[in-house]
Image (cartoon, rainbow, N blue to C red; front, side, top):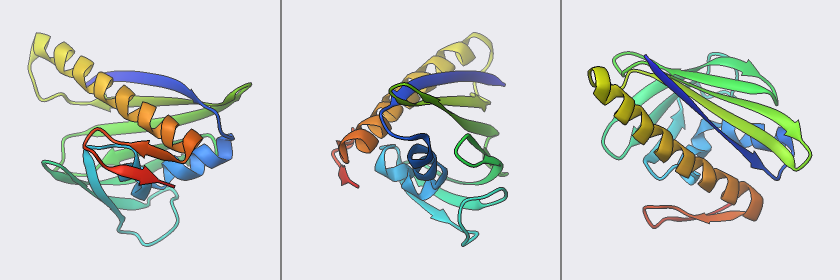
Length: 151
């Protein structure tokens, strides 16, 4: 397993940031690679809520495995998808909310290539988090694939 984390400060209250990111149906609004996310549990985000995600080249299901309102939410992919845990941790800071996004995953490549794959994924995730920040602070964002999103 490989892991990495990215951090950024979003100039919004912690509760607002948490409510937006913990509703994974919002992910296509800031992550260009995600086409659609459906809440298959039909309930508000909470421990055990399941989602079906369509990405540009695949699809997967995942479940909320940690849920501490306004502080932390984590998801894990469900089989047959490759193992992935993604965890958002939020802290109040002077300028708003510090969001830490930590990933633990299997890069599906051997040895030294795993480092390169992890570095690429980390960079892409950081770029998407920048789009999240822009969307939450400005109410709109232009995604890498050309979509214009407005809150």
